Amino acid sequence: MTATVTKPQYEIKDIALAPQGKQRIEWAGREMPVLRQIQERFAQEKPFAGIRLIACCHVTTETAHLAIALKNGGADAILIASNPLSTQDDVAASLVADYGIPVFAIKGEDNDTYHRHVNIALDHHPNIIIDDGSDVTATLVAQRQDQISEIIGTTEETTTGIVRLQAMFNDGVLSFPAMNVNDADTKHFFDNRYGTGQSTLDGIIRATNILLAGKTLVVAGYGWCGKGVALRGRGMGANVIVTEIDPTRAIEAVMDGFRVMPMIEAASLGDVFVTVTGNKHVIRPEHFAVMKDGAIVCNSGHFDIEIDLKSLGAQANEVKEVRNFTQQYSLPSGKSIIVLGEGRLVNLAAAEGHPSAVMDMSFANQALACEYLVKNKGSLAPGLHSIPTEVDREIARLKLNAMNIQIDSLTPEQIEYLNSWNAGT
Ligand code: NAD
Ligand code: SAH
Picture 1 (cartoon, rainbow, N blue to C red):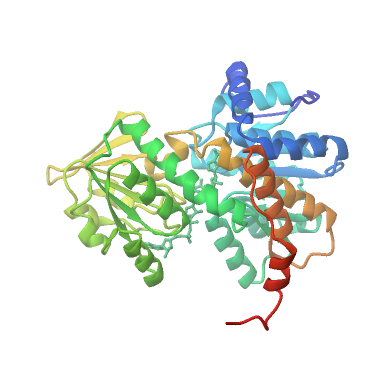
Picture 2: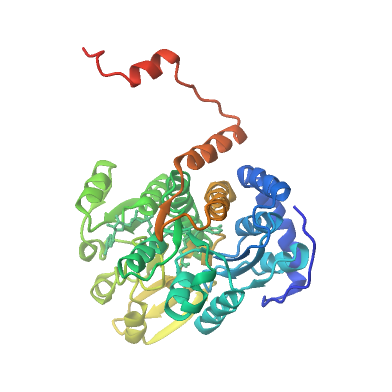
């Protein structure tokens, strides 16, 4: 995957990290056969010729392949981070140096820099926005009304971004189409569940090096991400407790074999806590008060507000970094609480995010969603749009082919039977 190097402006940690980043990008590509096929087609067909595009995603080896596919498809694309802690600085360097893609992202950037980068991206006057969490779209809608006429549409990667877009639509401020990538089956079935399941435990283990076997793991939220974390936690020998607010999801967790209880009861039992709700203050002062000394808390859901860290910080006598991405809050009671990744996504802050094999399908959806927006320019109504079922199915078919797995197909007799109503008992 090569591209002509122009002279982009960029803001990254260190351009000298490029060789390592290039090697890691190439390694990830081995597990991304679906996106590679799309990228090769884009390079021939140039569906994005003349299109200005900004991608606000975690700057990882996987996102690199998405950005390269879009650029090779003719897009004038730039990349910014969707989270202040998730940038892989070597990848950012290689995208700039080896692939000619401007990147504005530095791991550990403060909130002001993060929002400055969002505004630099909007200064690019995009026609298409790829968002992960809806920060760019929300900024556009709130502060850049004059640019809305330039927008063909946006595509959204994650559950909370979809929730925010729906809220914008309900408020009457979403006046362009937004492709709902998260809700494609080939996205959330795999990315949210198996991706978050594996990479969250990876983040916890890299940050702490604890043994999970025999520990009590409390998972807040039994949605797609929560199911993955609970399942993989059990696989590692942890005793898993689930907390929920939705009765149906709570029953599902019970029937999947997990203990379910309110957080206030789980708080005193847990050794490790993971929030995956997309909500705020799911773990708060009354929970910290009854936790065991040394309890570990982290978030793999959305922003850094799922855990009420402001309150914890206000109570603490001392906050000290005890390992990378691991802070110990010492409380007046003599107990300490351990917080991973500053309450931001632990899988992306302390590890490398989801493995490439799942991001292959998520980003195939992103690439095809962008192409769909261009092909249907001017004819899509404002608001959220599903990824067409045939696109979703095709991604699954390509993935199975790449995995060398064949499946059955319907016989003519079965097709006739499934379309009939008069062949009963
Ligand atoms: P989901 O809607 O399927 O699940 C969220 C669950 O949390 C729901 O079942 C909801 O009832 C529950 N919940 C809400 N408030 C709660 C509370 N106070 N206590 C207990 N449970 C509560 O969403 P999802 O797809 O599982 O995504 C969850 C979050 O993770 C979102 O913010 C999403 O954007 C994010 N996400 C993160 C990653 C990652 O890489 N870490 C990957 C995908 C999605
Ligand atoms: N801006 C929010 C976004 C939530 S991130 C925040 O960072 O707080 C959740 C999304 O990250 C998921 O939907 C998933 O598709 C994406 N993600 C997970 N691993 C990734 C990886 N290796 N590369 C790029 N994106 C990744």
